[in-house]
Image (cartoon, rainbow, N blue to C red; front, top):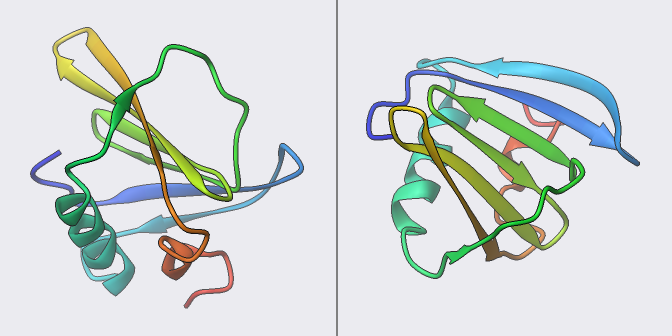
Length: 103
């Protein structure tokens, strides 16, 4: 996840997809997201359950981040064909800069 050039974001309401967006290298929200990942390297716990979509699903090359009201689930490719899933508690505002109403 060191070189994230773009991500797709799918927005959900009550487990129903309502819209989606692409954040490319020129989008300031992508830089904020990469910074958020960098500053949130600690505090993750292994997570073994499958979760229904939260408010957003952010997908990039080799990873997806399912964002709920006060939690995130990170699924990433640790090695080729070897995925790991981690969870972390967050505040509801932490990733609000990627909300569907953001520019």
